[in-house]
Length: 194
Image 1 (tube, one colour):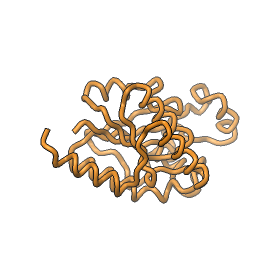
Image 2: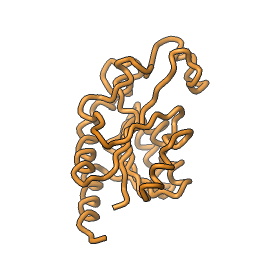
Image 3: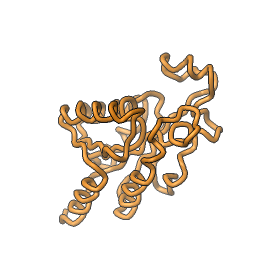
Image 4: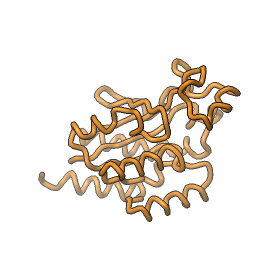
């Protein structure tokens, strides 16, 4: 199988209630993401934990977030907020990619590793859909990957925003499926002889 899983920004500052930059609904997606993660582990498929880290001085943050970073620390290396949420922690052999921008592909080694491993299809989960997931999905598509958004293993600030982004992503030709739908397809693919 030539699939990999991306889990994006499921860090304490974003996905734990009371986190510095909490995304409403992100915490509720942890069990859904974990279902997909455990299946990838069972099948021995690559898992990429894609995270944000901002230097405390703001020198590597997007200009649109610079003011917010001056008001409060967010995903600063060495702080509890930068850690991946309980239940989704990486295991040995899984990848941790630090992205300096919204897209997991921009200024990272993600594309290089995926190509070296022969990966052609990416399942995308995490938070939040209109920014980091969306940028990653469209960049992945532009780079020639088959991209799948797992809709109930991702989150946005509101359901209205979530559904509007799903429509756009689907209209661009990417798959948008639930965890159950994705796992059924993954199981079918795992049974197909290579």
